Amino acid sequence: MGRIVVRQFFLFIFLLWLFTTVIFFLFHILPGGPFDLEQNFSAEVLLKLQHHWGLDRTLPEQYLTYLRNVFSGELGLSISNPDQNVLSVLQNGFRNTFVLNTLAIIFIFVGAIFFSYLVVKDKESKVSRATEQLLIFMSSFPSYFLAPFLVYFFCFRWDMLPMAYLESAKSYILPVIALSLRPMAQMGRVQSKNWSESLSHPSIRTAFAKGLSREHIIWKHGFRASCSGLFSWLSPLVVGLYSGSLIIESLFSVPGLGSSFVQSLSERDYPVMMGCTIFFGGSLIFISSVAELIQIHLDPRLQALQERQQV
Image (cartoon, rainbow, N blue to C red; front, side, top):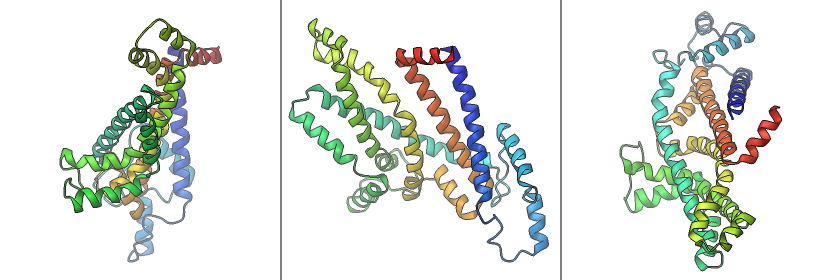
């Protein structure tokens, strides 16, 4: 297992370098610059600004400088707010984005396990069939479609919940629901299928033959066997949540990383744009690596396969 962890670490470093390289050249190849919208600048002032921010250097020089700064933890200063460095922008928005996405992940996992249990508990019951239909119904609502309905009914029509700014615990309810309802339903459908398949395994049938209760077998044996598929969802889930949180933060006026990224795009603030993108990408690569390690730990077959590939 130790060699697998070391391999994942070096793979993480390589993927982070590759992602940083692609993002750097992509942003610099795109037309436009951070000072193009300023019409009152003379050519001399514009050249001095470009020299100050290192934009007059060749692209390879800018790339090597930026790559060195990224891996040393220095992402530079914001062009639109020179008194603020990129790390402080990320720190200011990270808390709200992290709390929002963490609550959404908890809600998704707990809800998916609960609804999948209702499906698996008794496949022939009305509750199981109704839960399956409910999961199909909920999985058809994307967050950008669901959020306006939640705001209209719970904020304006019934005046039950606050709408924005995460000023209290209640203000997290609508953003979390809008962000996590659809992935929770999708994960619930996948988990109920995996859980049902695990209960048909020969070892599980042996447990039934020994006279163990169905509840004990479902949770003690079937649930653990189905968890490998559950954690395989972690990486694409986080990708979906981070991309969806950009929209949700805008709709609910959440002062998070998504808002900072959208604002940097409108201002063509290259350091903040790249800092937010690399932070998002690096977080996703890290979470993907951790999810794969958890999946390998839970499934001995995957661990044996990984060890054979390294021999």
